[in-house]
Image (cartoon, rainbow, N blue to C red; front, side, top):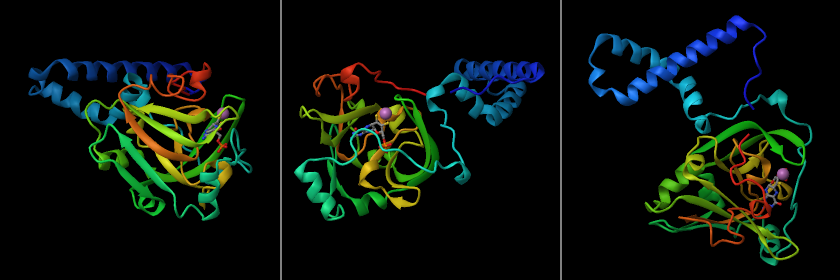
Length: 260
Ligand SMILES: Nc1nc2c(c(=O)[nH]1)N[C@H]1C(S)=C(S)[C@@H](COP(=O)(O)O)O[C@H]1N2
Ligand SMILES: [Mo]
């Protein structure tokens, strides 16, 4: 996931020194309020501003952006994986009507529990991004996704201070009746590339990819990208949900934080 090692050792060394400098600047920033008036520190601040993005990558890699691609990079075929058509009667009825009757329920630890139609979700500030999806089963594919920003949705429902995780409940139970679900924390929920996607490659999300809405949380692996989202629940802990590990695959031993 990190950038390839540079072939040129001088460039490598320069990168290292510049990162060390940035990190030092930020550490000073964190600890030395009283230095902010001195000239040299103002100068350092100016420099720091230019490189803050880089420095953040070093100090808090979870806030870094996932790599974005161009239209030329789109995969000719984007495979469907896991459920490709939920069997439940409720879902089938919604699909028949083009999801006109679908409402996304957002509840749990929020001040304003809400139900949003697809049109209301489409009216949220959105983001479009071309990213690579990596499945643990060994395939990757690049697609263009458009969706409402999860951060904007959360702002509207006003999370209570005790809320720590966002749980996505999906429409597709497995053969044993265990529903697919996933969860992320607020750091990922507020990441600019975390969206509730309703379009893939400029088309309404088809059923195989999670219609009407699926999660894109681009710094993590495929199984975190919950499809067929019916309900979002804010919780303090996911211990009492299903197997207690925060997701369908997590309950079967996968990592909860599936960073790439
Ligand atoms: N509801 C639901 N979401 C899901 C799955 C699933 O079976 N059900 N499979 C996951 C896995 S393992 C992957 S790789 C991706 C596949 O997304 P795609 O079908 O759009 O390729 O969805 C993820 N989200
Ligand atoms: Mo996957």
